[in-house]
Amino acid sequence: MADPHEEQVLGKAYDARLMRRLLRYIRPYRGSAALAFCYIIAGSALSVLPPYLTKVAIDRYIRTSDLAGLHGIAVIYILALLGSFAFSYAQTWVLNLMGQHIMYDLRLEIFGHLQKCDVAFFDKNPVGRLMTRVTTDVDALNEMFTSGVISVFGDIFTLAGIVVVLFLLNYQLALAIFSVIPLLFLISFIFKIKVRASFRRVRTAIARINAFLQENITGTTVVQSFVQERRQYHRFTQVNQEHRDANLQSVFYYALFYPLLELVGAFAVALVVWYGGIKVFQGALTLGALVAFVQYSDRFFRPISDLSEKYTILQSAMAASERIFKLLDTPPGIVSPAPPKAAAVSEGTIEFRNVGFAYHRDEPVLTDVSFSVKSGEKLALVGATGAGKTTIISLLSRFYDVQQGQVLIDGVDVRDYDLRGLRRSIGVVLQDVFLFSGSVAENIRLGNRLIGDDAVAASAETVHAAGFIQRLPLQYHTEVGERGSSLSVGQKQLLAFARALSYDPRILVLDEATSSIDTETELLIRDALEKLLAGRTSIIIAHRLSTVQRADRILVLHRGRVREVGTHQELLKQKGLYWKLYQLQYKDQLGAEIKLCPDLSPRV
Image (cartoon, rainbow, N blue to C red; front, side, top):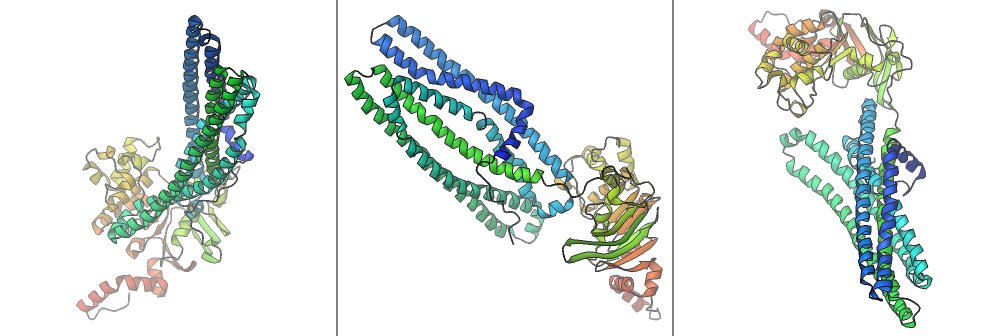
């Protein structure tokens, strides 16, 4: 099986389709791009001027001892350098400003798309890989926009200008310089092939590091609990070593490529000095022209070197864009219908009609599940781990879509509801409560500005969370830390109850919501639960049978099928699966009672 953290194999080094799509992100900033383009042309023109000014100074003024003319040409030379600096500065500033805006837009687009993706998408894509898309891959595109796609024209214009001037000065010396170009192309071609493979290794390694870090930082408690620090350290050492080796290989090719370019350039200069010197002796070339040729030779190879580097940037951007667009082109599996039949839940009646579902093909989790819940009724789901209880909740909230049958609320298929309206109507309190970095109040209202401070305080008071909140340093403004690290498990669950109550949902789902709360805290919130559940359709999942005894009905699941339905007393009388679960959970308590009272009947 392929490693889920592995990066995809890179596509073509240049893809016109991807480039056209990338250029769309420049469209809102086309004014900045046009301005940068003008700066590049002006800067390129000025960068070609100094060697020619040197020729003029030597041949026209130094040779004739014209000091006034030499002063004038020196002033023009300095102005050309200052102008080149100014245009280069302006170009860099405008391009980087544009690149930052494009990067901002692209990251927003990716994050917005990720928020629309269904839960099944995140089951298949590791968080580390998705983080790489938003961070490293977007950075690669930013580098292309700031240093590649527009600034490449600067190198092209500079190169073209130098070629024109060289031929105007002396076509024979120009051909002598161009004689080394086939060697340059050969070196560049080999470099591109080698760097491409090396770059692929680097991208794969950084994705593995991101995935490994995310997984281990999130699971730090488990790592420390089982004393796995040394093992995880060695595993990270291997992943980090792969990244280091891949980068060193890339550095090796760069360290070889640029000195080779310098060597070829030095060879071309030597050729110019030798052949041009002969021409000067013969009177076919002036000394100023020879000096200009030497300077132009040095400048001729600089844009070629820059173009090779920009090719690497382009290749990196193509790989990054391919992965980003593959993510953006992945359509969300769960979307609102157009138009929806219902905007929100009104009554709260629930019906599962012959529902079948599987996370993986040929591994059914639910098979022909049918039941109904009346408005305001409390239904409890019990069963062994893996029986399908949490899956029922996921289908109700439409985190997944059924493959067979229907899930209906108020007689309307959940697939026909407006998705936001449906989920706003269902309050879910899970066993593993997720809190965001922020204050206590922010975690209760979750950004809903319609829930004021008084409503937040009232919800906390109702579920008995106000007691511990008022003991916090800043009370409702106290920062809870990442994932609520500063709070106990029981306190986090009380906040989850307050959060659900503040949204006033029509349907309430409690998924093992009291399993991590101590007995004293459970007694405190029992009254709160009565208030929370009153008038709402409720589905309660719990392993503690004491939690579900007050439910109007209890549904017993076994291996994805509904096996028993009834009240607590009715199910005990049947002496079926529920009775066995009750016996297993309370056997110690029942045994103690029999010992104290020998005449006590063993029947429940």
